[in-house]
Length: 370
Figure 1 (cartoon, rainbow, N blue to C red):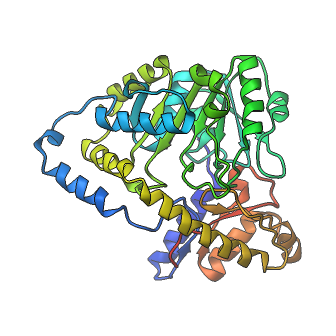
Figure 2 (figure 1 turned 45 degrees about the vertical axis):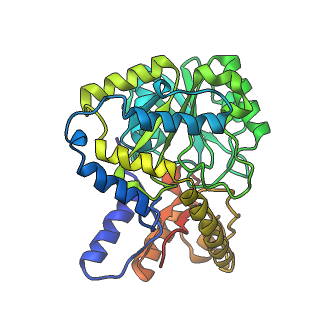
């Protein structure tokens, strides 16, 4: 695994804090709100329950898996049950397990560029690399969505799967149903798998979010759905996620979990069960984020040399900063990110960390309370 500009930003921010600087971080997908009271109360009750003091099951708590299955059934319009679900240590772990199950050494997996970080960060590219595969970046259109034609141009005899994220990270791109059908038709025609990374699905500000399986139910037997409670329920530190997939994938994931971590911590699973029973929290968070999104995008567009589109979803703004770079004589967004951290103690992620062109993009978060 290789280095990434995100690590440099994080290390420098920590060094500044150690020297007493007041650093504002707009660089991580980290909700600033605390987990809801119902989540905390469920966790406290679980700590006092002797049943959680012993081994759990490798596949995960049956009640939690059943609730996840119900939620995915609602999203996809297809029947899912607890047996289709594997509980994981967050969505990253789910992506890791999915790629371990799907690919062999040298197999290729296609993913959007810009998209969740390029090599060096535990994003889409790195989980593919960890499985011995090759991550192939696919150039998106002007709205940061991958066209089926672009996927086909990147197709080779070693292509095995495509990772699709809607809303996208960090672009916020939400795929319309028509585009999802085109991608699904392409994947089905060539016998490819689709890994649907739905971790930001609660933050759709357009009302147009659709699961690829609702758009194309025929892909049910070749799709892995990934999710978690980190974003919608402000539980990033709890590390509870899941994948839902056909039996051969969940069996592989269960075996991998059993042989490595034994199972996901039982107390966290109880807390996640309470979180998923609380449907109001993600709705309130999305309403608040929509308001903050407008404030941040308006402010960015008031700066000369910056053009920031209004994201369809997610938690980030991803502006085009090429004009500002030209005005300042900087060569890439990494220069801008370094300047912001040095002079304003403001941490953002340069676009180059997401496979964006050198002169485009600095991802900034609007969920901070500062």
